[in-house]
Image 1 (cartoon, rainbow, N blue to C red):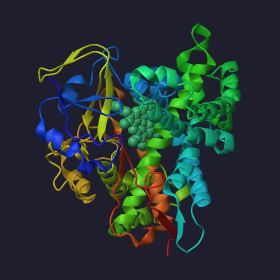
Image 2 (tube, rainbow, N blue to C red):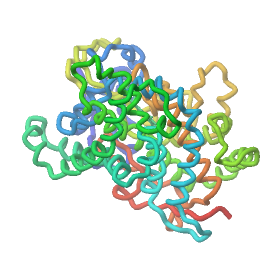
Image 3 (cartoon, rainbow, N blue to C red):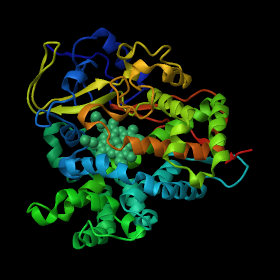
Image 4 (spheres, rainbow, N blue to C red):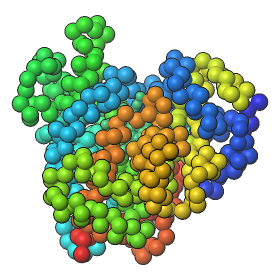
Length: 471
Ligand code: HEM
């Protein structure tokens, strides 16, 4: 029988270090157990992911989990169809090198707009700064220039995922049977609708243009860039042969990508900046690498290979992501048929399942020594270990690091996403000094809400970060 973990502290709890997550995987190392999150979830032993990772979506899916946790039934946002996943997996990589110079341009422009142009320490909200850098860069990929800097598109796209998370978090506080009645009257729904309307109206001309144009036709480089995502997904939806096609499918793909592509990288960067401010001893080795590359070529001429050469930047990002996962659980899935684990337990149909994030389960990664210590060098040491299947890289999707998930639905945008994160961090570290406000010297703890782990910044915490031009 499945056991319920002891000591649930409720949806708004203290940092997970002090909750049952550190205890329960040790208590029940080889069996699943239920945790009473807002939506009760069966936590499977980490090694069981390996036996489930290739199951078809009809049996176990990521979309099912998104549907329940993010109220897709009422928001229509967050569902990932194969057309979107395949566009990111197969179309994006073939165009990255072409648009690398535009990424450099966007990073410089957005960072210079958001960060102080002065050698006086100035407080800036890190989330706001970084989402306003990531947003236009990802915008260049999704909609192209000039729409990526358009206020309506940018604000709607940035606000969308936040609005959905706020709405679904409120809704999930009500019992499941009541949700259909409350869903329509929750005032938080207005923000979701507003952001969807802003995105749909902004991209409508692009969708019309690409629906009218044969998508394979030759175009100038500016035209080539306009509505890149629209073009990729249309090629896969094949509107002329598909009686079920509607432009709303393209809109839905834009909504869903706001979650992963804008907020995933922003979250990593916010945590990396807090880590940098908390562990200033890493500024020198990071700058040694960044300055070496800047001496060889100015930032605007950097390529994907330049970013790949910066091994310490990679190790720093990986360690920051390992120490600050986005949830106490990862690998979120829902069963659509009963599944029997090798432990002998049968998980019923329509059950939310997940694995404890390795950060909160020492047993999952016994080879990570001194796991509570922020120590990026550990990943440099591993670079000489050929037997570890490149697990040391920031972008690896492995069972011991669920940052990007694992298996058939592992994040298809991660090769691009990690390059962009490292590139943005390198630009900031190369040009600005960073410190925690208020004379803080210790790394402030993250904040936990239900299963989500957030940086300790407003509105969940009060940590502020100060920047000044590098001295
Ligand atoms: C760099 C920071 C990013 C992080 C931390 C991140 C994280 C994740 C995670 C955890 C998943 C779920 C995987 C699973 O459950 O197995 C995912 C899925 C996904 N991500 Fe990312 N992601 C990032 C960047 C991106 C970018 C830049 C894009 C697009 C350009 C993207 C597109 C997607 C898509 C389309 C999926 C759904 C895949 C599917 O369901 O088959 N992500 N991401």
